[in-house]
Length: 403
Image 1 (cartoon, helix red, strand yellow):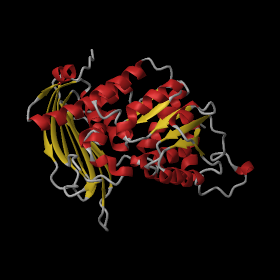
Image 2 (image 1 turned 90 degrees about the vertical axis):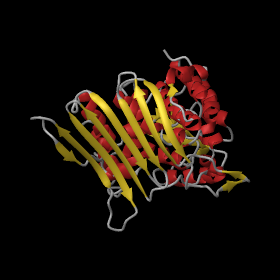
Image 3 (image 1 turned 135 degrees about the vertical axis):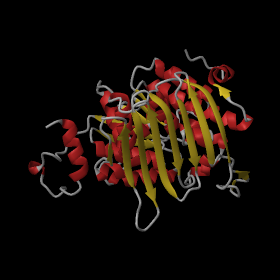
């Protein structure tokens, strides 16, 4: 049986079959982890990475560094759900990065810390999984890309939405099967509730988050870039702060992040794309529509707050002439989907460990992380100026050279 299949079965059934003695375990047999990772940042995303590391099974979390004691305590509790081995708690970033007992680093610190943390972590020469966004500014993102370009180990960026079941299927249909033919237009939207609370509320302030299109929507710009299969040429956007946090203050400072936006992107190959954001809708809803010369693909996911439920994944492929059309509900096993981001983080970890083992990976590179930030930052610049942003000129203004 393939090892990947055994890992999947173990992730789903191990909790239910925990009563079995070791000699009666095959599909859920305990195997010593091949790798030990340290977690840098143990907030809600860091805890998700901890949980998924254990579910994936080929690695374990050795220790954690986070200056917030509450985050460390929460990570310790999460660790105890999977293993009796307690987390090592480090007193410094350097100690966590340079511990010779570990094989990789997962960085899930607040956005504004990424560049400074990466500069230290990269000195370890250990594999790195850096949460999105790669950085809060284009120059910092470019600097990290320069580090990653000559990095001697795996350097992966956490743009895991490409692994959500609906988007993974959409990418396969469009890029592998050519299901809609030559892509011409792409539209995407996210409607959701406001940002949740964070330590020191950093996600409510542009200074720390990079603003909403960078902090949250880099995921969608990564998908648009992948689907367009081209570099962005122009970006125009409108948006503002209309509903969320208009009366919010933290230590006397008013919140200033966007809560809605409309973004139009023109790509060098002629593909036109749009993105619609609303952060004050009473649900979580995402939708992708791709039109080509041979058909149309629509993919969506929804998680609402209604008693009767309206949640689920959906994919529809409509084709011209005699080519087959269909509707489906892509998904991963329930335990994997519930582990975080509809199972995308689990698949992201599969690719991270695969890459460490020398296998092929479809995870986001630092360069792809940079391009997702270029689109987001250009859109925010367009909102501020009311003008179309030409990407080549914008990059020159940022002191960035991408050939």
